[in-house]
Length: 110
Length: 110
DNA sequence: ATATCGTACAACCAAATGGTTGTAGATCAG
DNA sequence: CTGATCTACAACCATTTGGTTGTACGATAT
Image (tube, rainbow over all chains, first blue to last red; front, side, top):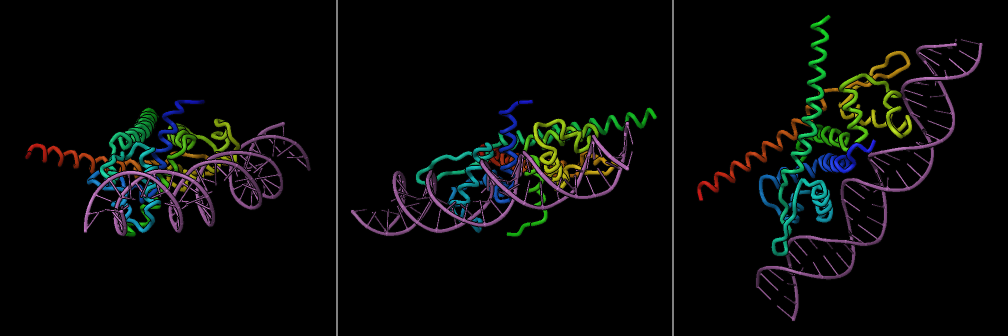
């Protein structure tokens, strides 16, 4: 197999990152505005360290970036990752539509 | 918070299901054609039971359905789950585009 | 009738996940 | 300088995940 190992693990990380509601919320927020890690942490009923880990997961998945500003670390949304995930689902959708087309064709023949 | 707990865990399962390359491959295949569980199992370098578990994960996420036919269990793609995941990413994309619009507006003003 | 096939499911295991607390280093405010 | 704030990171813990093997049972083929 070994289709495209790099891309595959990249996608693993992307979808894994989306598979948690706290992380999805973080992505939404940092897309709209600017947040420091502690700014984000104050929003959730969990420890600072836990939020820090969530941000790290998102960063590894290329869904956010961090930039140091003074003693703060500013988290921002990164469109790149989002696009990749979206493109994959678009592919799947296309496969499905193609199949639906074939089915329709078969029905038309019969 | 408790935004919409049901939908949130549903999305957790959906993205979690996509976060594995074997499962993504299974989804592609069963969208195009028909496979029994053992038919799928023969494609991968892992045990039947492992593939059975992957299919179960996909089923829980509403990405595939199973239907008994004789002694076989036929796995088919289920469009519903795919659409839900796709819709969420579309929402995120929309949020992003909105933000880009605002940025452009600010630049125009300044 | 018997052997084989496809499935289900339990038990087990190592590694990853999602959380915690605690410690320590920068940076900023008074 | 001192104290508070923001971050990083290690250590720990319970649960989940992704895999295994083994057993059991209905459906099928010979």
